[in-house]
Image 1: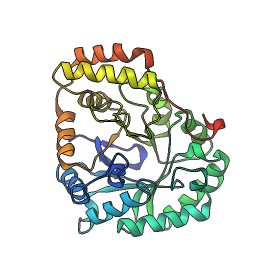
Image 2: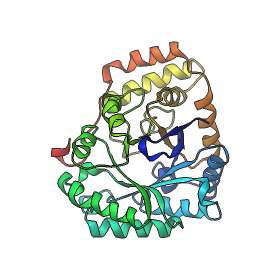
Image 3: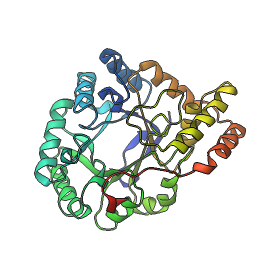
Length: 311
């Protein structure tokens, strides 16, 4: 396992991280016992960062993860969770100081820990950036001062928002998703800015939330039809070559040393082992070039998320 230092935080994290969304049944029903085993398998094989959120499974992911972590020494893992998003509808977002402060305490109780390492503003494109800058992040800094979180971060889909927020307020870490993968490398455009800010960089969903896999897409997946079609074409090519696009996608993302960690979610212990093996296998440059040619017409094609003014 490779380990990389998260910017100025000094925290060393595994280049492959465990994503807790699947524990909340975000991608389909799970066997809870298998989900708990998947966490243990990840930890036993050198993965030390676990990322989750109260939104995943409407608190189920945090609850199951708390059961998995019971009895595990706290120094064996680095834990990240989020605040401000609690469901799918507009009323399920709350970036107020009072709510995010209470949210941290609720997450700590579900997770069974005294503190998290990273507390992140979840999907900030659904909120007012002014409120996030002047109210949400200052509230999380008070949480940090109280010893309930070590670092404060932000997450969103639109890449440009990282710069817009970080030009106005300091954060320790960012989490981007679906923007550093085979079909979309928009995150790369702001890496020099992020490096200058010395923030930790989490790249979530390097398989583009199953777009770059042989598994069925969840009903809620927002990818437009042309992107789905090209990803399916690329996946078929990989299968014809005796491999999988998921393997290639993970290898491609993890090959960039300037991105500190890549978060992949699964509640299947066998899938954790497969991801570890895929990450360590050599990348096929010829296959990569062919897949990139297929995906070139949809490179950086994305979807809208959040308030219109934030897209």
